[in-house]
Amino acid sequence: MEKIKLGISACLLGENVRYDGGHKLDRFLTDTLGQYVEYVPVCPEVECGLPIPRESMHLEGDPDSPRLVTSKAKQDMTERMLNWAKKRVVEIEKEGLCGFVFKSDSPSSGMERIKVYNENGMPVKKGIGMFARIFMEHFPLLPVEDEGRLHDPGLRENFIERIFTLRRWREVITKRESRGNVVDFHTKHKLLILSHSPKHYQAMGKLVATAKELSIKELYQQYQTILMETLHLKTTPKKNANVLQHMMGYFKEQLSADEKQELLEVIDHSRQEYIPLIVPITLIQHYVRKYEQPYLKEQLYLNPHPLELQLRNHV
Ligand code: SF4
Image (cartoon, rainbow, N blue to C red):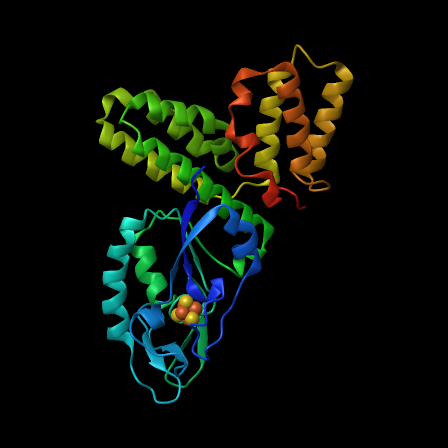
């Protein structure tokens, strides 16, 4: 499988590009996720022409439209950064990224809760890094996260699931345009979609069922938009339990009363967060393999990303 292309703040890869000549190497991103990902590093401050080392910077003024200013000399870097960022995002289009990992807390690269100082020198954590803002406005559907948030197991799982799913969707796009390919993709992702949002599951089902009424281009565009919106919504133990019970229904005939009871208990323990989601998933996978259930065998919900990433393993 080709690696997934992800943009990343260059200092997270260990590049010595920070204002003080240092880096912010993140081992999970390089050593673990890095096995499946080809990174496209971006350092806005260096790429817009600033030296290493350089004076540190911060945001100030209106949190919705702040200025980027050096901390001591108060040199205003806003226009330089904005002009560079607007050109850079157009260049990045060619890379076919499936997402971006930003450096947290940076006035250039941070994606949320960045300090913006008012005229009295008091910070409010309401800003967005200058490059991160332009990037997210240019690619509103692309999955984005920062390395700090990726330490949260739920956010990490959600981000990784989105980038793997987007990569699979991109494979559909690169094939010959056909409604059948969209239907096939949708069929395999049905339960994954359901685990994020029953409401979107219904809407996407309708969209695919009426695919013939749309031009192929409209179908691809609408499907991709709803898909990314859906996956952005978090799964919950309750939504997962709903999907798992739905899957259990496929084994009505095969499982004994005792096996059904055991599976129900495991699903309920996962719903109550006594045990990680991977436990009921593994038990269902066992039955899928044992009874060769053809529909479930194809469901990406059971296998949305490599096991080695150890996701779905937390409570
Ligand atoms: S946070 Fe962004 S601007 Fe700062 S060093 Fe890292 S990549 Fe460069």
